[in-house]
Amino acid sequence: MEDTQMPEPLRQAVHQLVSEVVMNCQEVLRYTEPDIARDWKRMTLIRATDASDTMDMASMLIAAYCQRTGMGMDTLTSYLQTRQQRSRAAGPRDADRHEVAGMLGTPLPPEGDQNAQMRFSLGQGYAEDGLRAEADEQRLFTEACLHGLRARLCDDVDALEGYLPSHVAELARKVAGVLEVPQPATT
Image (cartoon, rainbow, N blue to C red; front, side, top):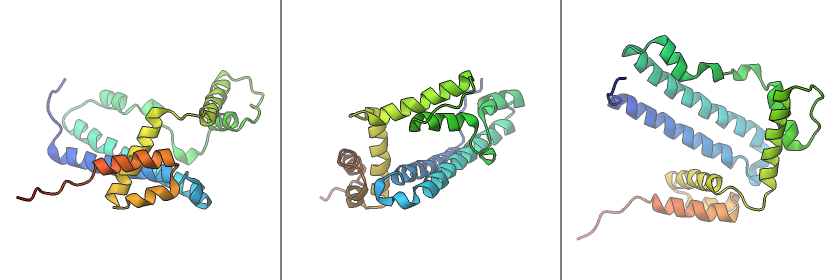
């Protein structure tokens, strides 16, 4: 296996694209908050698909480089995990509808399909997690990091108070505080 570093221009492009993805992911989280519920369907879908498309762009740049440097198509296809890919153009699948049924507590269609039951149970798990008194620590930290990063980049840390639950806003403020640009020392 080749043991070379990623070329700097490719590395910079990938970093830029991943940064855009992170900002889109923060927007997805932002539009789940109650104060902007009127737009949540449109904006969560738009920002989630923006994030997905941008990660695809990063993947394809890396794949093009790998192909250019002699990687075989079988290896490239394996690394791109093309068997997992599915088109958004096809819309939600039955499996997605089964998962939503589990989340919302509606009956599972009587299909007897083991995959349908698995996805239904997965949805039930999401619903149960949402009803817990305490949220997953890792998820809270991730949300706070995304919100804190966005607040710091937009220089609007005070806006965190307006739309986040207080415990997430507090952690996001801490994250934003750590990200402050250090001022040069005066002599």
